[in-house]
Length: 114
Length: 112
Image 1 (cartoon, each protein chain N blue to C red):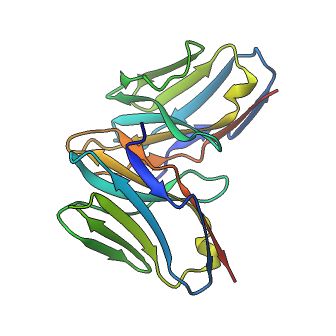
Image 2 (cartoon, each protein chain N blue to C red; image 1 turned 30 degrees about the vertical axis):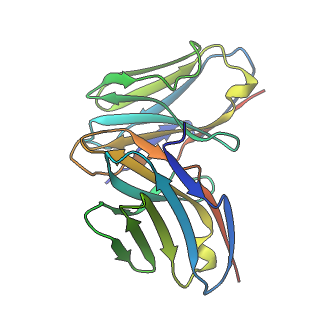
């Protein structure tokens, strides 16, 4: 089975540019999570969706960040405008709603804002 | 506020030794405790998980010990190997909940 697929794997862009990260969750999973990982702050939950509906976006750092899930097989995380402090690895994870099921992570997008 | 506290931050173990990573929590509503293993350039991957109705779960060289009264759980890696060198995260989630609360991670290095 295909796991969680994220694209791009690496993104380098200049400050002020719009950045869009993409995620395809595992088929049949109906919860999707976006995380940010840095050395300083570890793994931070940014936002998660149940059945394509955003449930908790309290982790989204600023209005520059937005996330959408237009259907069950696709989600985007957008940063506009990007800043150097947004440099991090961004992970997407998905999960089945059955009890006690783990989250399955993609391999992340390493984002560098110059 | 960190819902799950993990220690140590880093750990160096000799090949063949036992690696022990500890986590503690306060919220008694947590009922699922997974451990994740992360290699450089990869996402965290589920290693082993436990529910609070058992005190221990073993899968190969990996064992979770769970102390419900103390609200602590730990990962033991027996006969540690250089290939086990990775970052390990504990996590917890609530009954009926969807969100996972992750520890801050432990960087394990197993030296030959």
